[in-house]
Image 1 (cartoon, rainbow, N blue to C red):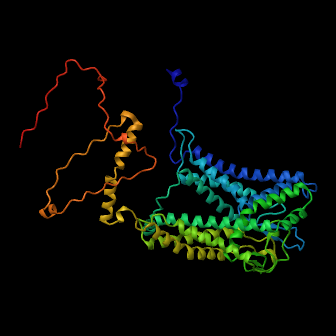
Image 2 (cartoon, rainbow, N blue to C red):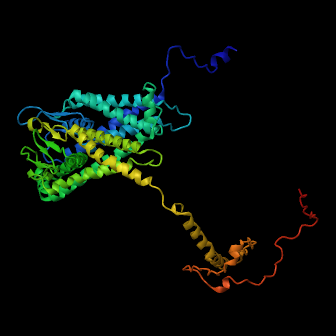
Image 3 (cartoon, rainbow, N blue to C red):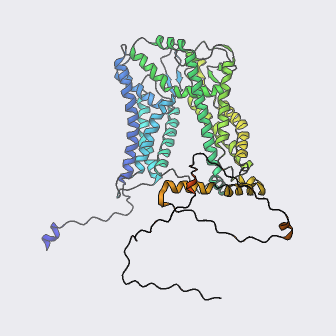
Length: 529
């Protein structure tokens, strides 16, 4: 008995009170957030190392290249870098973030949040949305803090204050989007701490339509900005080519310049949209390019995108034509704001269009703030569109055009239908009589029976109706026989033999043999009432 007791399998110890069991799913989410940050750093490190190896005159060793990669990763989150090796000796800030570069950390962080919210197996633990969000965010921010400390020893360190709020902001938005997408993109319920009136108001469909209309207007503005930039690049093709070739003579340097220009294309789209809206964009302190004129900026660096700027002097009809972009955007907002025309009133449609203009203005203001930033000190301290003027201009253009367009589309969609119900009773009866008296139905039925064979039976002869006795005054009037109109329809075989009666065909044998032993009962008539 003692041996059985000693050699038996020990029972699991009871958990102690006050000790919480660690969740492996939460640890996996923390690791997923750290891996997402590491993948972004690794991608930029590999790219910078390749460019450093291919450069014929590297200025620093591999350590400097890795420090630069960490600085670029921080710049992709919107953090402001500081360049100390300037000619004047004054540190120059670099705060203009390439918007295409922002997509790298956003996509990686969103993917990590989605993977943390999904369970690969049925018995695997699924954490709540708040737990996944917090765990992924902790892992990502831990790597971000280490990258900030590491980049401080490089040629372009990041401003600690700027990095302290830009990295969490991008990580929070990307993680929230990933968790929301993994949960099926629910639209409610709203948090309970919000007032009841606010929660009821946001449930209304008008806000979904306003978001859609504002997003449509913003996309039209960005597409128009891309069209403006592309047209300017094509117009100044010789200057752009000369600027590109003069920067460097080796292929690695030209490849680096090309990559930088590609990452700045979304910024150029926003700048083109701001130019078309009217406020334009700044190219230094006191220098602004607008459709009405461009005074010129002599302190601009040589870069292919900057070589496509308009010529110095007042505006021309060619530059004024950029105003067609916000006009189309206003029309798009008004069109997308009308969807439930037969269910809502004119005031509701106008309010939805106005809210769509507000959404468009806020979106363009945010994009303008993200695409602008300093490229140096003194003259280059202001570079890009002003966020509040761009937002106000986008709202004004779209609101002025969207509201009347939405009301007009609402009136068009709710117009009374014109059809047979809009005719008079006499006209409707005449149309019906012509249809039944013309013989078209019989001709069509005969043609259909001829094509289908015996599958379609013959049309039964109309049952004669007893004539109604007419008054004496009507009998005295002579009856004038009327002619029956026959409507000829093209495409039908008007063979007179179609309507002729056919001889009776012999009755074929029954398809099924008779049932032996069946008893047929006579049908009884109902008793008279």
